[in-house]
Image 1 (spheres, rainbow, N blue to C red):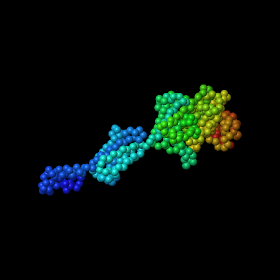
Image 2 (cartoon, rainbow, N blue to C red):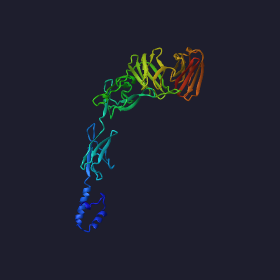
Image 3 (cartoon, helix red, strand yellow):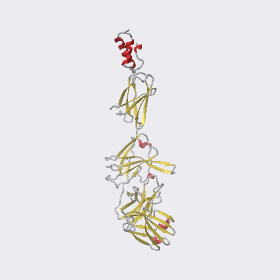
Length: 441
């Protein structure tokens, strides 16, 4: 019967008629047609079914709408199909896939290609695909000093690594997570544990009903990144809860205050820095309050009781030494604290943002108030020997004022004519130079 079969699988009707014409009716037409039909069936005998299920290896459930590909590695024939609502799929293995060809069946999940290789033996092929490796779960609860958290909380997962170019540690945000608003729980799945030394920090965003009453806190109940413990691989297990209890800001109700500004020391002209976190504790390290610098680099703490305090930042990847100061009835306000950020540290000092010469020369000099509305007072000038030149510049470097001083203990400058903005005040003396940042309201 094979002698009646065309040599091509994709024969045309004209070929059939040609065969009939050349047979010279040696056989009945019905017999010839039956033979051709049988030939056709034989050629389609390889149209078997490829089927299977795509399963999420974490949940064990079928994945719907997942695209599955099949590739004949010998002929490079390719086809594809989408899984149904139960994760199942099926398609015909066409006749141009020969027996013993290797079929590569694959799909993508969690950014990973999952492949199963099957040899076609002339029978139905079943290939199940399991996508996504075992997920690593970082989960837990953020509480308010152990109490129930009834608002959404933001968490930062950070990675600390050594930077050979900077010869120092650098930190980057790996992910930002949020708790629910009904109990402070959070959960984040990863296909692999992120690289680096990992740390976790939580804070209340603005709009939280308890915002300002609880300090931004690292896992391990630390205020600064350098004291926070690193997460272990066990923290990325669904059965392990990584909980953070936010430290309370005890606050105070006194009449004293402290204020200052934050500047960038990495450039020649100091630039105000916005959004830098400043933390205030008492001398024993008990948290009092926290704030962030505004768009002009200014920050302040008010309603503070008399006493000794520490103020410091939490600038990730940098040293954050504390600046200690004392508020008394004689000196209830300190307004000239300057925090300077460079590539390796975030540190506070009193007064000048930059000093040339002996820094001790300028410790007695104070500018107040800062911010200033009308009159600026400069005290302690009599502690610097010789004549002094006082110059004021706007942020573009244009000189706005020049004043000389000799033995005055304090001078007053009328700045009411200046528009609001940031200014730089220089005090020049024979033994050095001091530069101050000044905000005019």
